[in-house]
Amino acid sequence: MIGLFGSGAVGSRAGSGVGSRVLGTRRRRVPARPAPGTVLAEARGLRVRLGGREILRGVDLSARAGEVLALVGPNGAGKSTLFAALAADLTPDAGTVCLAGRPAADWSAPELALRRAVLPQSTALSFPFPVQDVVRMGRAPWAGTVREDPHDSGAEDDTAVAEALAATETTAFAHRPFSALSGGERARVALARALAQRTPLLLLDEPTAALDLRHQELVLRICRERAAAGDGVVVVLHDLGLAAAYADRVAVLHEGRVAADGPPEEVLRDELLTRVYRHPVEVFPHPRDASPVILPHRPARG
Image (cartoon, rainbow, N blue to C red; front, side):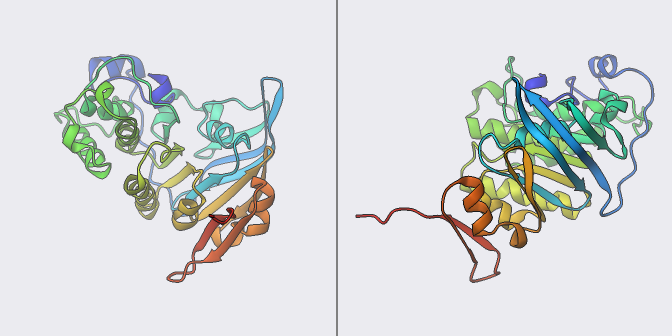
C-alpha cells in the first residue's frame, strides 16, 4: 500500500477497526487551517546521496499556503528526490526539512497524514479493491481525531469521498475494481484518494504523466482550486506549459540545485531553459494573457 499512497494513508475506512488499530487509539487534534502565506514545508541546505551519487546539493526551498509550487527540470535533476524529502518520505544526508513548523522527524506518521497528502509516481495495488474503497483510504488518518463525532455514521467521510470522485471525474466507475482501470483512470483515482485526505498540503509527483489533454488540465485546475481555498500544493511537472499556466511559483532544478525560483514569467526564460535542458527553447508571451508559452526548437518539416 505504501507504494501507491505514501507513508501517511493506511487502512480501509476512517473510523474502522482496522484504521483505528493501525493509527492508534490516542485522540489527536486536527491542525488549524494555515493563514495565507504560511510556510507548510521547508528545505534548508538539503543534501541527498543515492547510489553513491549526490542527487541534491544544498537545496533551499519552501512551499506556502495559498500557492501552487511547480518543480520542473530535466530527468535526473533531483525533482522527485526533493519531492520525497519535502513529503518526509526520505531522510536527507544533510540539511533540514520542516513540515508545519516542526522538523519532519518530530512528526509521527499519523500526525503527518493530517498535514500532508502525497501522490507518488507509481500506482500499484495488489488487491482488486473497488475504486470508492481506494479513495476512502484517504480518510484513514482522520480516525481517532478529536474532531470525529462518535455518533456520526461516516457522513463526513462519505462527503469527502464523493467530492474527490466528482472532482477527478471518477464517479462513473466508483464500483469497478482498481485493477481493471486504464493507466490514466488509475492515476485519477490515486489523486482522488489524496484529495479525500483533505490536508493543508498536497504533494503530487508527475500527476499528469498518464493523462490525456483534458485530464491534464483538470488536474492543474484542481491544484489551483486547492490553492485558492488556502492549501499549499507542490507538483512535479515535465510539461512547462502547464507549469507556466497554473503555477504561482516555479522552481527549476538543475544538477541537484535550484537554478531559479519565482513567478513563471520571471523564471521560465529561454536562456535558462536552453541551458538547463540542453536544447534550444523559445519563450514568448501568449497573445491573450501574456503568460509564457514555451516551445522547443524543431527542424523544419520537408
